[in-house]
Length: 206
Image (cartoon, rainbow, N blue to C red; front, side, top):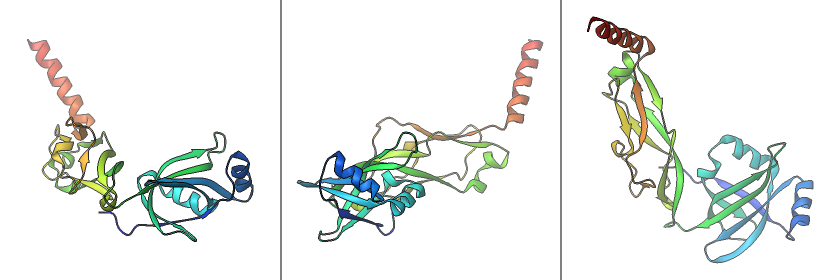
């Protein structure tokens, strides 16, 4: 499961509308808003550089944050969108949604592959072809997994790994019902070439 929930600091933004948002940007802030949980939306300002650091760290949209705003109770939030400048690719607005501990949400969760050395197929020179480096799961806000794990022990060349082959964290389920492919172990190019040549020779002899 995910570790300690990181803090996300903000301050209440006075004024709303495009004018207030432009003023916030001129002052080195990124305007945003937090909504949901049956409460009124609150306009916010985020300090540009700390926010940019979190965005560059990756998986911002998949992270549960503890929103800290002076004068307000801490609340768990998840980002539902980051608007960016189309030219500079800089954040220009952030949308956050409040969550209860038992709220169920859909998130893309990273897939981690372990025990490469225990895969006969990879030992023979096969290649792990990752089809889905992330999978969308429905999870509870209190139990967001940091990743799901695929064990490559015993995997041979030609083996295909489906979502139903993976033990998901308790309370989590895939948002797609079909048994989709996560990865496969492909034959090395040399072996594929040899097999193709053999098929050609057999065809010629026939």
